[in-house]
Length: 121
Image (cartoon, rainbow, N blue to C red; front, side, top):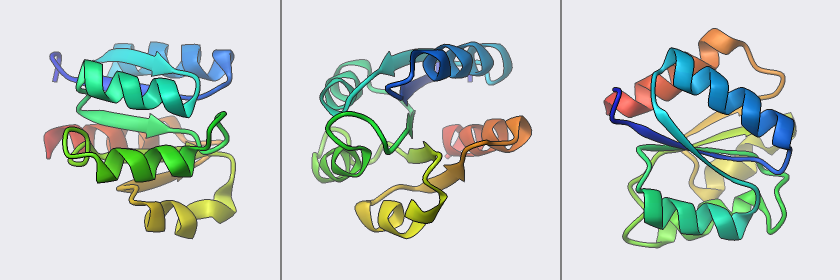
């Protein structure tokens, strides 16, 4: 898994740094980050991540970014895990095309297991 790339998309700098540190230490994976939907789409095309962790409350909209990733042939096969404080958005996230859903606050082991599961597929 050490050649794996995870794209973390969140507009909160502290969340980005925490997730980057955790994923690099415990998965392990190379982590690239994005702070809005436009950056997320560009990073997904450029970095070719194995998994995307997507917050829904990003500028430009996380649901819109998921729909775009899932409709674009170069990125449509990348698993997208929604990681959000909007626990009530599960159904909308699944309809947009996400592959998994984690509500914040999250349990570290559950987050790591979910990321690893998608890296193995």
